[in-house]
Amino acid sequence: MTIYLSRRLMSAYVLLQSSGHDYFVEGNDSLLETALRTGLSPAYGCSDGSCGQCKASLISG
Image (cartoon, helix red, strand yellow):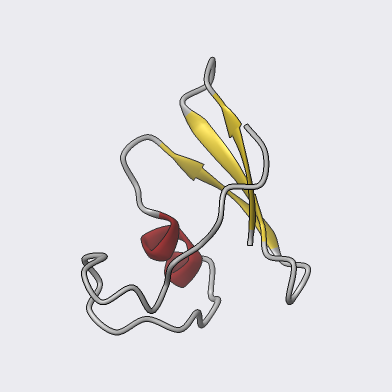
């Protein structure tokens, strides 16, 4: 997953390298919440970041 942050807009542009899907995350929404809302099916186990299954890497920003 590649994440580009836009500090002025308080949003993040997310590009999933494995699938090519992209979307914007606004405000306090999590990457996982937004991915699920856009119809994607990312791997996750706990929904609160404690299990690490949905861990991503910040490539730029």
